[in-house]
Length: 195
Image (cartoon, rainbow, N blue to C red; front, top):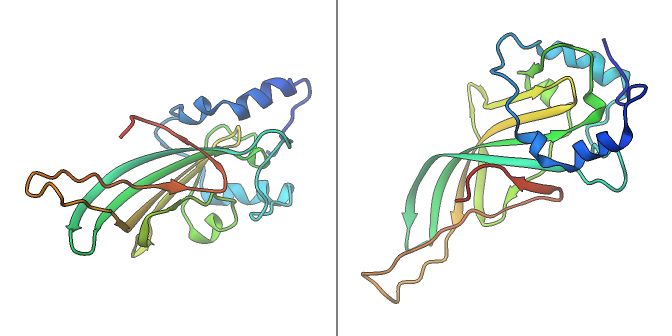
């Protein structure tokens, strides 16, 4: 069931173009109906001696591009004294990991935290966060799907308390703008509308 990342006759330039072009990360790949279970990823990981500490770069001249999409679920608790606010987001990260290319006909859905921990994930963080936490309500709140072409989609729910520098010199007619700054050691690409 497992195949090597580069098939015979596959154009390397075509593959490089796919890895450089972040638009492939945004394509909808179905609803997840009847995906394969988590156990299907284990032979794939074993066959390539997968190391979750190694960044999935296929070519030295092409960085890993990570597409980021965020849905704001909750935005509240604006505190003018502490200059902070609370935000609850669902963050979807998408990237290619050619080590996970396989011959299955449907995506593999990762549901168990133990299996999730075996797979490399990007390291985005909120720069202006005072504190952040992942949701764990009876079980960790995450979704991961690994597609046959090596596309990985990982969704996680995060709650954060963030700094927001507020100016009150025009009070009571002031308007405040609070941002949420995201950074990573990877190349992040924003997917969706500008906020």
